[in-house]
Length: 336
Ligand code: ATP
Ligand code: FE
Image (cartoon, rainbow, N blue to C red):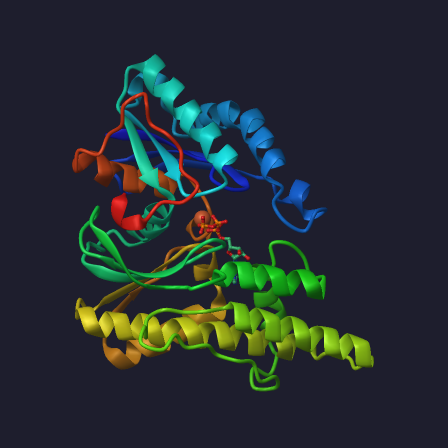
């Protein structure tokens, strides 16, 4: 079954063709980062407009790269939530038009379910159930992946997402946007114990997390150093920050894995590319005996291959949509 998949929920326009849920025949991503960089963050209306310009050509390129024609397609899958509403609407309407014109089923895909499915591409042997740590620009949650289409959030951030925290701190340091990857690179060789940063706990909800205190403490530390004219040891600050984020995420993911007892832990989303978090999870799983599944770096951030992969399993579960399909800025992962 060949699925044309479309993703436009934030600042990447993406199209892919995925065969039978696990084989990526093509994956095209057009990033808008350059345009948004001058503003230090994504400007929603500009994002929507760029998606409109790019999406049709990108879908044609995905078909050409897969060496298929429109007649070879069996379904169209699309991210319908969550995301910037104007941006998601572009993908949903394009997918509707394509499915209608080609007389194909339309499959709505939850973006974070897509991030989780990126692991199926990298690991052909991975099957649910497993526990997945979902960490990206807008999401920080520990998810019980009971089956390909039944999921429940076990814990989540009460405020900022981990990726958002990376981005805001990096912006104040002036090291680029989005800031996660530059912070990760900067942290190499730094002393992760040099700066003490706070770790938050949500009393009574041991799997929930909070990153706003870490963000504020980090911004205060940077501003205080700037005001006093004291140079900040940037690699050590970035390493200390990465350690703090990882120490919030990894022990909770492992506690959730222990509670479920599946013996399998996966990671998903843009922040899953973080080298410190990957290393800490590797060490924790080596100790607990859980099998760890890390997505390939190119499938950590937003892409459409992950949408085509999850779309296949949604289709198998009978989750197709009519032409009235809407887009949603927020949507619980358990609702699909
Ligand atoms: P969501 O998936 O929750 O809707 P999003 O789609 O905007 O949000 P992604 O594209 O999945 O988010 O991930 C982008 C985030 O990942 C950014 O916050 C970025 O800084 C972060 N990121 C990317 N690489 C790294 C890295 N190596 N270390 C830490 N963070 C990273
Ligand atoms: Fe994402």
